[in-house]
Length: 240
Image 1 (cartoon, rainbow, N blue to C red):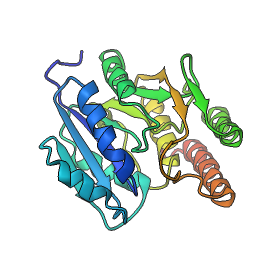
Image 2 (cartoon, one colour; image 1 turned 90 degrees about the vertical axis):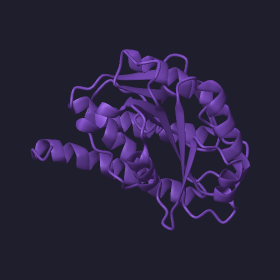
Image 3 (spheres, rainbow, N blue to C red; image 1 turned 90 degrees about the horizontal axis):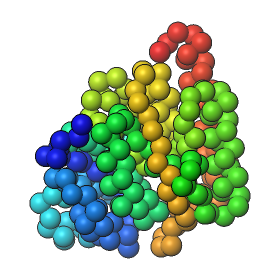
């Protein structure tokens, strides 16, 4: 069972999220009742995101300023600093609600990993039709190649028990494909993975980092597919 005194660490990577980050921090502080640590990992945002976080002066908010960029590497850096028995991570663009993160944490009483999912009961993906189709294609391909029961392999919205890291390593490489590998390895390790549906929609403020152009979106999708195939090859060659 999750202790009522358990500390929760939420890792949030940022790049040009000044317009969203303060509201997200405030929402997390309001929704999560357990002792809370919020770790913002800023990749040298030119819009002053890090300064906005620093100006809050909140003792429970840890700010990490990086010179490099990279989503998976930012999550990894924040997780290394996390002190909570429960660790969660999410995007900063307000597409992943703080109240849902609180629900994910509650489900850790019965599971090791709880994913915020667009594609199970209670979930929905309310973005542009092309992006929804592309995400379904990526997830369908991942389920076909990797197996398992997870419907939203590239969610990137999750709460876990810290003990998960005794069995699975988060590889600090890539964009959303790092999450596919993390969840695949967790299932292979026999960890209890559960999904909670939520309504996902496009950000209302700022520019999406995953699809600033059709070309970059297609390149990202290709990288996802390549990572999935490489995981299956690793399985067949006994490199797990």
